[in-house]
Picture 1 (cartoon, rainbow, N blue to C red):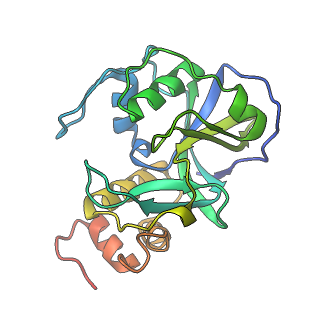
Picture 2 (cartoon, rainbow, N blue to C red; picture 1 turned 90 degrees about the horizontal axis):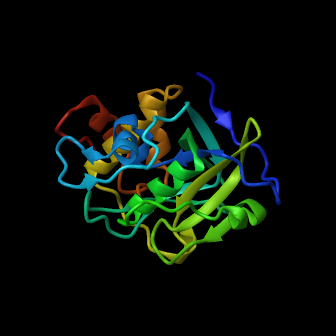
Length: 225
């Protein structure tokens, strides 16, 4: 399976009916994304997701690389340890999984990310006009458009700050395992490559070696140095 690279951002594009939602976190897993779209409770979880107004699955899901960097910061109440964020201005490449969804589905996914009730479409004119739009102060309320795939805009959420503005925080083992599993499910990357990629992300770097992350993927309980 080929890795898509988002094409250059084109300012002033009209608002389409569909967009690529690029997930670099837990929604890389189709099962978890399915809870955001179809509603319900994930196995082993306690949160009830209301779901999207349009409950159809994504038309397609493809692996993608975006300009910028994945980093870990702040403290997750669900996973403990650092959360994953995207800094589009940082040098490097970030791996993600892009899902082709409607604008309404993207809007409802965004609402649920911030523990709000879905039901209203986002105004995408700002992010499609400039590549960035801060919809609020929340952790995932800043919309980024890093480019296009097949002429369709790629959109993702991140924090309003940059990687340099916050202290890196090491992610928890369970969170790293989940992100690594999502990248493996996307298709083109093997376990050793995924482990090496995550080990160099700020927050994980220095706290997690590629060998330790690979051990998580192998299902071993004992972590190697």
